[in-house]
Each structure stands twice: as structure tokens, then as C-alpha cells.
Image (cartoon, rainbow, N blue to C red; front, side, top):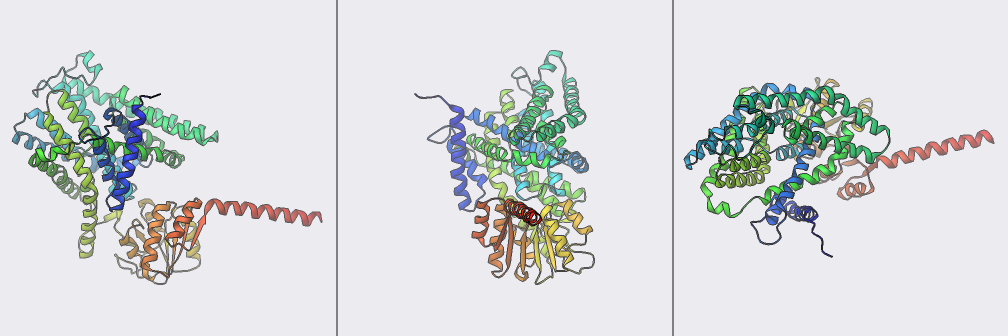
Length: 580
């Protein structure tokens, strides 16, 4: 019997093709994200063969955006958001204005109306939530100053787009479109509100939502998770995390007109104050990654490869605005606020793409008869190509940052030093670019495990340094007078700064096995005689690290089991002696 299962078929095709194309991209040393986008193109209506259900793929992708923003909120406290408001708020507003004006100029050159130009410019001004956050997380920048600025900037952009989505239907008639084509806010329609009334209602609804989250949500959400955690059921805890993320996001969108992504972000941010936030982030990670992949597949399905040949010059101009125009504007804005060049470069690279809000704006513009379908095609093509190029842009930024550092005289890293800078202790005369230690121990990670190891090394008076990339941890290390390399140890330039070739021991205390494997592999290549100790959580991770060259792998669960057995036998031996 044949079953009509479009949902299952879409999930299977999306994940299956994403895996195949992603694996090929990884093999060719291209970011897997590019493979996911090409998988969407292959499953889309513009290429021969199987065509997945585009509407279902888009809805599944929304789940990925919700879970991703919830996870970001778990690592981004309200204090973090307030700490960057001085640059994120004016910076995002000015950058949106600049990009919108450039888009308007291109639209007028193409013979479109002012209304079409405004929608087109707004669509080019807002970066993709998923792409920006994925790039920041891959580079472990989330807890750095530049990462907080990028996320704060993104939140302001999202809020601006929420307001734009509400106002566009009200303004459609004035801009030459059809104001009856779509009603964005039923309440505003029933009340017969004008433009200013709609704007005021939007701010009131967003304010009420934020107030409810800060007052009631702050107590209710952590209490729910604490209650479930005390039941001892991991299954229920995971279900509670997902239910909170999805329910708050959906409720925010339906009741307050806030975007799904923004609602999920606030839910995560409120929960971040709970001690269970780290566990909640870990439990939601697998689903977050899976649905984020479906987002990229759904974007790829919208792309018509033939549009590149049909309108090459307008497409190149669109890409110029997205990649160059927005980036230069953001770069100058960040420098104007007296932030380091490294921060300005990271923000510029983060914003050099467009995504989900751009698609929503484009679709709304077409329904309101404001934006021609050619404009929607340019936005989609610009999104696909800019997302594909974003990894290369980040690589170029990393290369440029290293060049500026080697030249000297330019403050690249600043307070969040992320490019392999040594945070030397006060008594050290170490170079700002690399340590002078030899015959030393390199400790990667200063978490619960690494801090204990570091204290033992300090008591033994052995020469050692620590590689760490979290700003708050680095601040503690500086206070404790530890020599520290600030950066991601998986990066070759960071390991070189630690004088890997002259080191005697490498201790990897981070829990991420894949990242630890990259460190082990580079260390073994650079210094065949170095002795490496790493940690793992499973037999598979032990074999993985051993195959790459680690000498000793400590598996936490095994050591706990051995400790329990040792103490049990010791008790039994003492009991036997006492009875004998």
C-alpha cells in the first residue's frame, strides 16, 4: 500500500542530500554549509529530478531558527545585551539605513518604484540569523566582546524587521502598492488604526512581551526546569527544554507579533540565569543542528541557477551591496565607536550576507504589489551566493587580521583578543605574539578539569601556559597571573604562538572530541616527540584520539567507575580485616 507522506519525504530528502553534498564539500575542503545549500538546489523545482515540498521545508527550517536562537539566548544574558547597546543599537540602525539607501538607488536605476526600492533595500540590510550565529559559534566567539556585539546587532536588526513587517501593509497604498493585499496585524485592522497607531501598537506589544518575560518568565521558566530536573528523568528534561523554546516562540509570534526567532531568544536569555542553562543547551544541540541544516536546504530550494545567466549585472550589483556596501558601512561604524580593528572586521564579515528575514520581506513585498518578482529573484540569488561566500569572507578577515598583527602598530584584537595573542603575566616579558617558554607544558582549556590541572602544575613550579578563548575565563587567568594564549587551540596560528615545537607535554582538557582531534593531529605533525594526554567521554572518542596520535586518553566515566571499584574493594578489605 502506497502512503502519501510529504513531510517524511521532505525530511529524508533534505537530510540525505545535505549529508551527501556536505560530505563532498568537506572532502574538497569547502565548508559543509555550501554543500547543504547545493543539496537544496538539487531538491528544488529549478533542477531536474526529485522536487521536495518547499512549503514544508520552510516550516521545518523555522524550527531550526527557533532552536538556534533559543540556544544563543542560553549563552547570552540580559547583562550581555545591555553591555553592547551603546554600539549595537545605533550601529544596526545606521547600517540598515545605509544598505536600504543603496538598495533604493539600485532599484531606481533598474526602473522600479520607490516602494519597491525600499522593500528591496530593507531586504538587503538584514543578515541571516542562522548564518551569523553558525559562523560565530564555529569560531568560538560567542563569549567574546565581538561576538556579543554581533549578536546584539542582530537582535536590533530583527526588531527593526518586525516593525517593518507590521508597517509595510499600512504604508503599501502610499508607496504605490495594494494595501488590501495582506493585513499584517488583525488587531490594528479591527481598531482602524492609522500609521502612527500601528507603530505605537507594535511597540506596546513588543514591550508587553519583554515585560512578561522579564517579570513572569524569569520566575516560571527556571522553576519549570528545576522541577523537571529533580524528577531525575532526562527524557522529560529534554522535552521540557524543547517545549519551552517552541511554546514561547510561537506564543510571542501569535500574541505579540514578535518574530519566532526573537521570542525563542528571549526564552533562552531568561533561562540563562538558571544553573541548568548549560545542560539545557546540551540537550537541545542535536535537534538544533539537524533543523539548521534543513534551513540551508530550504534556502537552496528557492534558488534558480538560471537567474545568474539571465540578469548577471543586477545580481553583481546586489552582491556588491550585500558583501561590500554593508560590510564597509559596519566597519566604519564600529571604528567610529573606538572599537579595535579586529572587532570591526568580525562584525563586517558577520553581516556580509542576507537570509530568512530577507525572504519574508521579499514575499510580503510581492503580495503587496510593491516588489516585482525580478526583485524577489535578485534577493534570493543574493542570499544564496552571499551565504556561500561568507565562509571565504571570514577566512579573508582572519588572514587580514594576522597580516595586521605581524605588521604591528595596529590594534587588531583589543580587549577580546582572539587572534592568538599572549596574555602574559605581569612578571613576564613575553612577546605579544608568541611565548618564550621552552620545554614547557601546554594546557588547552581552563574549565572544571583544566583549572584543577593548572593548579597542580602551578604548585609543582613547572613551566606551562594555558590556551583559552572565553573572555570571562581569560580575565580570571590574568588575575591569577597565568601565562595565557587567547584563542581557539584548533587554529594553527594559536598553536604556533604556544611554541608547540619546543613544548614537552600537551594536555587537552576540553570536552569536544572533534576539536581535540584537530589539536592532536596538528601537534603530532609539528612535534613528533611531544607527549599528549587528552580526555574523552566514550570508547569511540578514545579510539578517535588514539588514531590521531594521543599517547594517553582519560575517559571520565571509566575513571569514575575505577574509583568506585577501588573504594568498594578497600572497604571490603578493611571489613574483612576487622572481622578476622
